[in-house]
Length: 237
Image 1 (cartoon, rainbow, N blue to C red):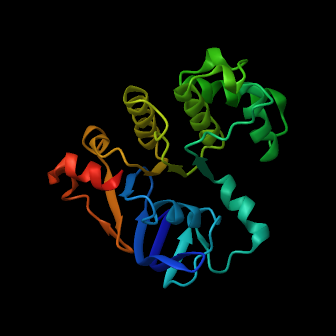
Image 2: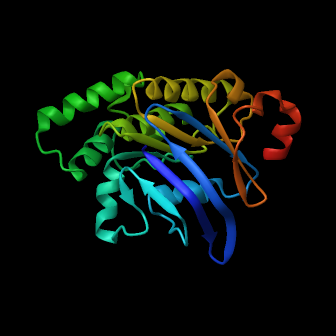
């Protein structure tokens, strides 16, 4: 089990946003988390990479680590085993795509320049962006920047990728390409956990579905595709 939560309670400041969360992620799973803005989706993701502390739980383990006992100095080691994708890309705008990716590998302990460049070539090829390696981020479209963000996330061959609204700023066609790419990555064994408001995407690229609503998080995989998509879309946006 890559992530296992039992009776986890999550707060944002003094607000109890999610109560008694039971949530688990295994190798190769493709997981959506849906719900209204403010329902706790992003807060949940932040707890997995220790951006937000868990207040109380029966169990909270991520990649074999007990989050309740994890020391601050141990968090970077945990994050090295994860890929994190943000809605706003968070690329370094003062350097090229190639130098963005080199920076990440060097920061995570890679030293051999040839191996670094070989790995960068591999990930850029995987996201079909090899011809953009010398471009600056501002020279890329939103979809291209998100592909680079995905390439960055898979550099260290993570066991799980955490993606917070990875298609939120993209047009429908580009969003579909990005989710398709993430789905392909999950088929290599890397688990994907992503929040989304794009409910029709759940039919196009099926996966496990959790919904955050009224302070609760529930597995709705069996019934999400029987919902009225228009109604659900209106609820979640």
